[in-house]
Each structure stands twice: as structure tokens, then as C-alpha cells.
Length: 339
Image (cartoon, rainbow, N blue to C red; front, side, top):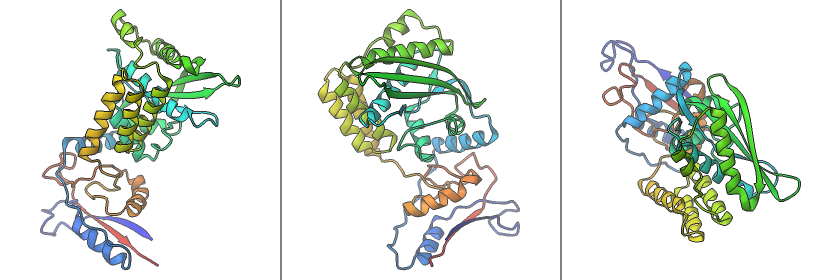
């Protein structure tokens, strides 16, 4: 059994200074886990790193979500499209097309598109990265966490004739928790690029965005005409959402090998390799506690979801470095009891 307790210190405590305090003690957690998990494989302690501005931004995003005011006007998010049907080859196609739609929408000055990295972080935190699917049930929280006013719900579906692919998209309003406009485009697989452009222009029309001639001309440009390269690119996008930087880089490299003119694939390969070299942290359940064990971290994550303490930040939190907690301090105690 795994439990967590949030216990404030009494005002008389020498570190309290007469106020409630929040102190996260990573060494204490390591000792507790080691004592409770006797006989299991020891987990090495990891040194904490300083809090960054991005960490504070994530904490503020969670607070904004809880307050219900986390959306910003004109901001739109494009999660991976859903692949409908039994054809598994359409899964990377769905990821690729959502990525292309996101890129095309970002070319308009009338919209601000949520960054892929931020959207990927949220999907991984909510355990949605494997499928990439965001529906009406999860959309409000996803939208608020990424500060999006609206989300695009897309789908890729093979039609009964066996040759035609249908691209569908609906626009979800995050604040109202409603899904309104539905648009679609259809084409054979070989002409899927033209269908994607048609879908994008219909989305702009539904969103009330008037494009300038220069914007329209830029959006009409196709990054590749190779379906094979697009499928490889989609596998790279899927690996990116799953946090697999190495797999993503390999897939993007394959896409560029298939079509040397596919510069977008080359750019994404470089980006994935940089992220892989820097390293990314696994999601952790409590701000300030680095991941000691994936199973334990996941269990604590589930326990703390109602407390809105879930975050993928793996850095220490203190009043000295994090403005999100100017006065609050306390002790988090995790007890692991083995049968």
C-alpha cells in the first residue's frame, strides 16, 4: 500500500518562522523508500536541480486550470488525429496530418498555435501520448493546461470503396466544453496532400480567419509529395509525443532519405537529436521529487491527482527560488508498506 500525507509544521518549529511551510526533502524520501522496500532493488538518489522559469509556468498553468481561467483568446491546439478503422498504417498518417495542419494554421497571423513540445508534455502527463487521442471528455483539461481557447479534433478514416481517405475535423471550445463546427475533405491516398490543404482552408473559414494572399500562397506549399516519406514522418511525430527522442530522430531521418526535398523532416530530426542530447525527465507526481522509481512515481501520481499536485517537473521547489510558492512550505511524507 502506498500513501501520502501533507503535514504542516507547528508555528513553534525553528524553520517555520511562525508560518505554515512546505519543505520537500528528497533524502528523507529515499530513506523511507529504502526502509519500506527492503529486499527490492535499491534506487539511487538523484540530486535536485534549480527551479527554472518554465517550472513556475507549469505550476501556474495548473493553478489557472483549477481556477478555470487558463485559456487565452486566439490560441488553438491541434492534438494528434484519431485513426478510425482497422488499418494500422493510418496511425502514422493521422499523426503526420495533424502535424501538417498545425503547421499550416500557424502561418496565419490571426492564430497562435500551441507549441508541439508543450502539447506533448500535457498528453504524456495525462497518459494520452500513446494514442494521442483527445476527445470531448479530456479536451477541457487539455485545453486549459495548454492555455488554448479551442482545440481541433481530427480523424483519418478509410471509406468503404477501399481507395478514398476521409479527413474530418471538429472545433472544440475549451471554455464552453462544446464541439461545434465539423469540416471534412476526401481524396485517394496518393492525393492526401491536397485533401489536407482543403481541410486547412475550411478550418480557417470556420474560425473566421481571413488570409492574406501571401499567407494563402505559403500555406498552399506542400512539404513533400511522397506518401512513404509522409508515413515515416508520422512515425517520427508519434515517437515525439511518446517522449522517444531517439526513435523520433530515426524516423525523421528516414523520411528525409526517402524525399531529400522534405526539409521539414530534416529540421525535426535535428530538433529530436538536440532534445535527446539534453535529456528529458520522466513525469513525477510531486513538485520537487525526482523520479526514484517509475512504478512508485506512477502510483503516487494517481493518489495526488485530486490534489492537483501532478506535474512533470523534476526539480526542487523552495520559497527562495520559486515565486509560485512565496510563503507556503510543508513536509510531504510517503510511506511504502510491503505485505
